[in-house]
Structures are given as C-alpha cells and as structure tokens.
Image (cartoon, rainbow, N blue to C red; front, side, top):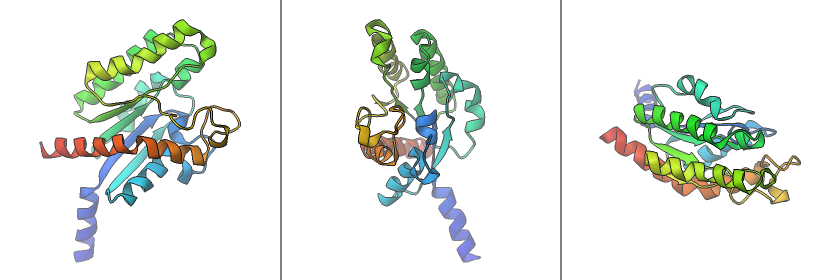
Length: 201
C-alpha cells in the first residue's frame, strides 16, 4: 500500500509536456527512442526533472494541425511545445494562412492557460526572398503578440549538416535530434518552471 501510494504521488508530481508538431516532432525515419520527444524526456530526466514528454507529432501535418489540437491534449497536460510550419513552407502555402492557423493554436492554448514554447521554422531559399522574409516573420510576430517564448529555429545546429540529417536533407537523424535537444533544452527547462508557477498560482 505504501509503495502504491508513493507511485501515485510520483505520477501526480510528474510534469507532462505535449510536443505538438509534424514529422520533425514525430521522429520520421527514426526508432521511437531516437525521436525528439523521447530524447528530450531522457535529457530532462538526466537533469532530475520528473517529466513525461508526449509525442503529438504527425508526419505531413501543416499548421492545420489545429483541427487535432483538442484531442492531442488531456487534463494532465502541463505545457506544450508547438513545432509547426515546415510543411506549410515546403508546400508554398501563403504565409498569412500559416500565421492565422498558428495564431489560432496559440489562442486555444492560452484559453486553456497552458504555458507554450513556440519553435520556429525557416522557409527554403528557393521560394524567393519575399516568401522567405514573410514566412520568417511569422514566429517572432506571434511570440510577441501572445507573449510566449520563441525558439527561433527548431533545426538549429542540425540543418545543412549532412552528418546530422537523413538522406532527404529535411529530417534529422538520431544524432541530429540529440543536437536539437541540447540546444533547445534551456528553454524547455524554463517552460517547466513556467508550468510549475501556473500550477502554484
């Protein structure tokens, strides 16, 4: 009975982060234990955080993932990492449409009073300077509007490094994900602090 009670208490103290994104989150082409959510959870636990990172990534998703936001979250969710937009750019979708969909996602999360870390993406250069500039402005603009922290480029440290990317040049390999996790970790730890403040508040 004592052991069971201790386990229940441990589960109650566990912070749940939902990683809501596309194939970069889901771990396209990778074993589950090498995907971003798994590696992030492992890194956080090594730093003594009692945390569970839920993989809510769906390959191919654009920012229209908004439609599945409600079922991706449950009552245990304490914080959310939003990583979307890469497929919008690859498909050349209008930046204004991407911005509007991301804005709606952030609004819904704020309504639920969930701390958010917004992870940005960059558009391929071959789409032209005007598109690249407009797309690049989406993330800092929304981060400021909704007062959420921004990690400017999700693939920072891995993109353009062939040793860290899969053969398609779009998705990171396991080593690439490790680099991504190392770089984003400080902001995820800040997100954990924010989620605990919200719980205490």
